[in-house]
Image (tube, rainbow, N blue to C red; front, side, top):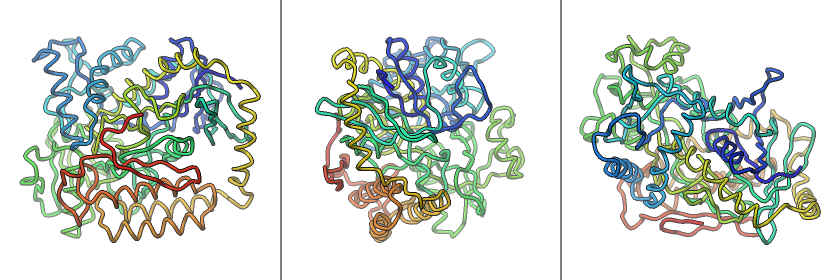
Length: 545
């Protein structure tokens, strides 16, 4: 198969790129691991995309549906300032400004494509406030179903883009001039797609942990592909643990999120004794940035020995109508949030670091791009500001095809000789990655062991003893687990090493043995793989391709 652009992943970033690729006249192909079981359909569906379950909204400044209280320049500057503050000194201000300034056009395009956001009776879109935001600038759809509406509208708009479903990209092929294609595998076997451009839009790594808000299969595979292709990753120690995830001591895996917007509408945090423990920690109380709230909950639970904290939303009028998704998740656990406090605890939610890119998705490797949660544009720094993720996916995903079109014009089509040579060489190297004895049961057992290790030793709070134990166990796992797990274990080793190197507490990274922020460490830890597969790292301020 030949095409101009391979898009790996079908969430907000991947589908935004598919729409923009069509506008650029590019022949794009989507590769997606998910399966759609409902027979023939005119519109491809991607049920496993993390975008679909996003309850938060889109933080956007500059839409023209209402008069701004301040001028546009001031409003943009305030959004930038809030983002920089949440990022705890590790944002790339140039990238932050670029992406936020691109937000209004990207959201307006989505609306023009048929996306529907909640509006007031008078016409303007409803704006809400979430943690870390100084003003109400966040738009929603369906109350707390914004991600589902973004996903729906993009699926409709990208319906003409060919898609390989139930398939995974196994390798990215390169030559001296950059990307030449990808290896793919589906139930029919292995093959390749020749293409001068590849976009990784594979999401984060939430399923590396025991409890998460991420769908099954979100294990950082895009990062592993990028590393093997020669790209760098950065800020991997900054896993954002969402502070309010529905707690159940008997359940692991993906758990229902209690949206940030619930606290934005006035919900309060309590411990089992009925004390509001955020009082005295941060003047913004429950509306402090996620890292502060999650850390406070985790430390309070550690000090008191309690399994969870409690979120009180009983005083919010019309809660069921305002938050139907949250209500449904709570009702499945026999909780009515209108009359009961909700048991919550932090859980792995968002990967703030990722593949090093610029604000247009460009990586170190010519023809390789990344967008969405798997990318480190510099927007998030040490901690993502609430509702900036859908914004980033829309903006950067839409920018990639412009670069891809220029590369296609310069490079031209990939010859069959070039791609077949790369594919055969890769097949020889990885021919044992799918051994006959490597069963689904075995893989589930191995993944479970890895998740337990990461949650126990590299979770919300860390210290040198725990991290060193994790590093030792990961080295042992790399030597003993099946080859299919090697990439995942390698990624966990990078996360752990990054956390060991950062001897301070900053953003989503909390070191119990170094509880304060160290201004001398205001730089990113950047990792790559050497030609022989060893992990190398450097310290860099504002890493860019």
